[in-house]
Length: 88
Image (cartoon, rainbow, N blue to C red; front, side, top):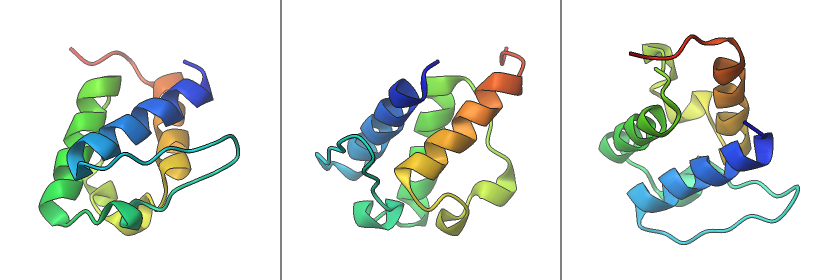
């Protein structure tokens, strides 16, 4: 999957959970803190991302400091998609 598509889908997941309508242009990024995710909504965001991409997040990533922006989250997902076996 192309990086731009991953970024777009991560942004859509964040917007869905936070009930926002942020958009990003090429080269732009949005810190996840801009979505005002508390611990429950951050968990919901990660679950939504897991379902969207068919990957599992390590428990260590369940902290907004480990995935600070839309682009860093998308880069992490891309690395998992490149080397991960499909989830059952």
